[in-house]
Amino acid sequence: MSGVVAAVDLGATSGRVMLGYVADGAVRLEQVARFPNGPVTAADGSLRWDFAALYDHILAGLAEAVRREPGIASIGIDSWAVDYGLLRGDELLDAPFHYRDERTAAGVEAVHAVVPFDELYRRNGLQFLPFNTLYQYAVDAQSREADAALLIPDLIAFLLTGVRVAERTNASTTGLLDVRTREWDTELAQRLGVPRSALPPLVDPGASLGAVRGEALERIGAPLEVVAVGSHDTASAVVAVPLASPSAAYISCGTWGLVGVELDEPVVTDAAREALFTNEGGVDGRIRFLHNVTGLWLLTETVSAWAEQDGSPLDLGELLDEASAVDGEFALFDANDPRLSAPGDMPARIAAVLRGSGSSVPESRAAFVRTIVESIAVAFADALTTVARVTGRHLDVVHIVGGGSLNRLLCQATADRSGLPVLAGPVEATALGNVLVQARAHGWFGPDATLETLRAAVAASVPLVRYEPAPART
Ligand code: LFR
Image 1 (cartoon, rainbow, N blue to C red):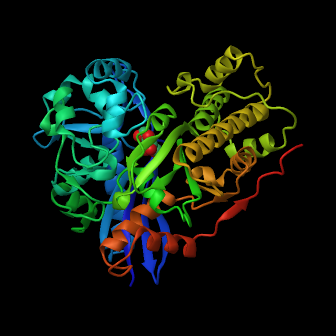
Image 2: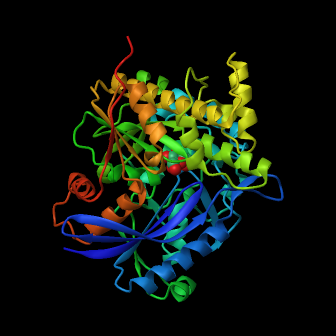
């Protein structure tokens, strides 16, 4: 069976609208629109998303998609996790906060004073990340006055269709979903003073949310159906990892590097908690057991600081080629150091972290880039060792999907430092996962299609690049 759908895929540094063509068990993407995204500093100094601009880009992209392909069967929306918009009536109260806004530190203290982290972990299964939605609500007085809080993809679906729901994979990143039942933990919400309005009805990927209407319909030009997908971008990306066995791990590598395996049941042991592993909800009730490593954020922020300094754009590809040619020992730093999470002046921050641990700061830009890439690869390798230990799985391959799969230096360094072969691709895993879940909902993969059916379609459609680990030095 065949057909075409549209995917809206929003990352922390760019968004895109894609057409996804499915035919004979294979899938192909065509990019319709790509637009920049990133933190903006509001008049009050807070870090926000320019949601109005994003929404405008989405409508323009979807209108162009309809113009190119009038037969689109539906739209699916995914984005980064945890952030939300507040509604009063049908109006968005303010531009949504960016998860890197520093206000969350106070939220962490407030939440842990009421519910200690050990208990939270047993209930929601989430690794500690200071921006998890429940910490944001704790310092967001407006959230108590709003009629609804909707995560970013749910907010967009609402603006398109008027329907207010919470898609379950992304809801799992709020910290308010019970890790076992996958229903809202209303008792926890009550203890934390989170209003019911922040807990809309839950829906699963594949559910139809209704047709585009009102102003959105006028802009887009067709009453397209909106179908829920794994609306957390990482959930969609994991759908499109061509995992062939339980011994395969994945790294979904974009702004973040999400390193983990897929499980059928959550693991909320002390070892998992101490290892900072999360149990996020996957499509079809699977568990994304993974750890957040600060990924390409370190590189993109560094390159944009240099570009600003030079007053002209820099070619990352060229810099990476030069970095590959750097020889010798590389200074390393902890990629997950919290001092590196806020935007701005990344080279100076990294230099401070290096100096603080007694390492020298590379002098050339090429060596600096090499230090960043190797440090990310070390963090990836550590997380792979930990996931094997905590789950008791023997790993024999790691898939790298997302933008990082095109970074040959990073793929090779990850293979070398983990001792595992790396299979790189697909680069657009998130959009593919979004498209495939819609296609399955339309029956294009037959009545009994599982995630394995969808992954077989990826394997049949996308060539993977293999990186062998360098032989261990003796
Ligand atoms: C990746 C991602 C991660 C989440 C982080 C913040 O884009 O969605 O999974 O931890 O962004 O939302």
